[in-house]
Image (cartoon, rainbow over all chains, first blue to last red; front, side):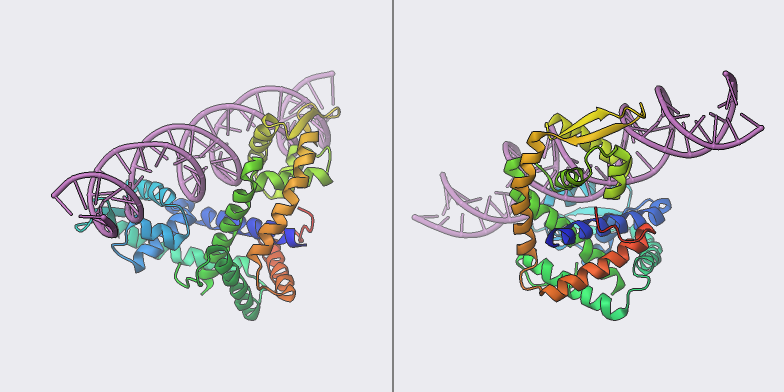
Length: 145
Length: 145
DNA sequence: CAGAATTAGTAGGCTTGCTTAGTATTGGCC
DNA sequence: GGCCAATACTAAGCAAGCCTACTAATTCTG
């Protein structure tokens, strides 16, 4: 019984990513990349380490994603004037435009996944997941991602 | 609001995998590999395609995992006498022994993640996730994986 | 100020997931 | 029986995670 939860959780997460990626394929952006774009929209100039922390991902993972997204012209690395080891991250015009196109796809994907799930159930789900997130990270719920 | 759910779901799933893998590292088995072992325990002789379907994963993904697990001596491929294209999958003695060591780690991981989450909340969570799973797969809830 | 410890990021190498494209075998249909 | 579609699996190549190990810069401490 306890085991099922982790398994189902992993499955649901994977299938949702798949559903989103399917819709976003023609735009050429993956779900994790969309998360990065979203964070940058609200945190212009954030450093890679900060991005990694918000995404709850290792710095190297964030760094490699930025490599690819820079290559694709979605984001820009600028030298941090105050710390020569660090990069500051910015959206490009192209990145900004693409977010607008991804937003409806995300809503569409969520809508399909949550068909027949009540508002109340969704809120409850989110509440439980936040609690688990706290347990796993040792931090209070981010509410930011 | 709708977006948060997908994001949090993905985060929780990833962090739970991380928590499990951390505990299981010394045994040398990953969470997805443990899922495979679990399925084989209940479905001896299943074919790769069947395994892939139970895991909700593409056949090639399952095939590559079996490659590595066979290499590691956890599972065995036997020719299907009725179909020369197919393999039948079996646990090795080593694979069987390792499941016994992994089980407590899985319980441990779940316990840590669900600290402070009531039994009722857990049941509700599972119910909602099953519903989403149905929406995403188009099939009735597996209850097996 | 010098040296040590911390911090920011990268390099290499692994697993898990995917897509697209292929081979080999099976099974249905005429 | 012969052809063709479907099925079972594999190959190549990519993204996203991870760990361990490294470099370079900053900061702390004596």
